[in-house]
Length: 395
Image (cartoon, rainbow, N blue to C red; front, top):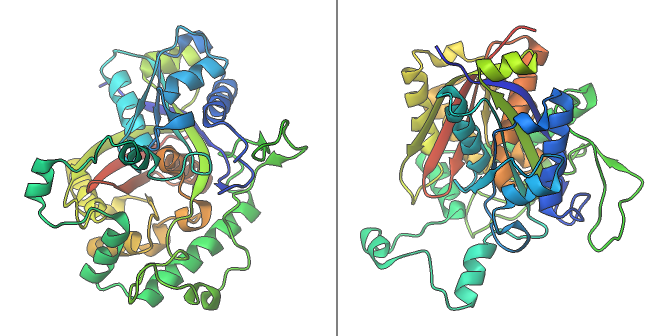
């Protein structure tokens, strides 16, 4: 039976808004990750069949098919094609799925999948904001407005609805946020991120040259985080539970994985990190929006012929603390297996790059712990969720 393997998975350390990665043009940042992946894996650049990158803010510096521009800025030859996709926060997880599908069917042997987002340089919602400012209208069509009359499509409102629906209180969300920082701090201190993070030079915006410094540590992790400090942050709306402290951080970053089939693996002469065991995607309520991972996970595990207890580690994106907490409660999952190295509340959420960022963390955590199966899922704008189950292969 055909298989899809992950040979290597890399990411940048997360950069805060206007922080250590803000001087990087996102095209060049993505190119740097592609180059690192090629160099680490030893793959002949001519053998890469395609590059698929996720990016949500496809405007300005991230417009014009940023994946192709990243290829042209990288060491890859011009003969390597590329495409950019947008499945909102799950964009690079979907890029991984598309890459796996390509090698599984034999159409391609080696594909780079990944994502990039510079939220410092291309702020969230830029494409729609620019369109409306120039009189190009709204994405909310007349038919869409009729079907969802009076409904509000907002991730922030959705996070509150998830908390209300699953009876998750503010104090539980704050405690989860603290745990994210503590776990991320512990992981960084123990070297758990060393295998996945690619050191890149530090650029600050408007600088002509990089600083004499390498960016190797996620800027958003707060070693001094405390429950009292988190509890002092005001909610985003009066009487709400969601705050900036229990939600993901705006972040700059890039990530990439190399996906191959048996032919690619043989030609590369490498031992893979993991095998892709199952892939799925699910669409749910676009108003509540963020609870799709709950049903998507249950369906994926059933279709894979598994039980949730078969999974050793889970990565559920921490877009808002209410999402993984609702996921834990609805599935009765073990919290000790969830986001063991922290999540987006501490590490940041560079939208289009987050999918393969989570996968990089997951496959390296499986290897580090000698665990077998890992599951990754993310909530996505429009009420969608991708799910990927991988199996670590013994090295």
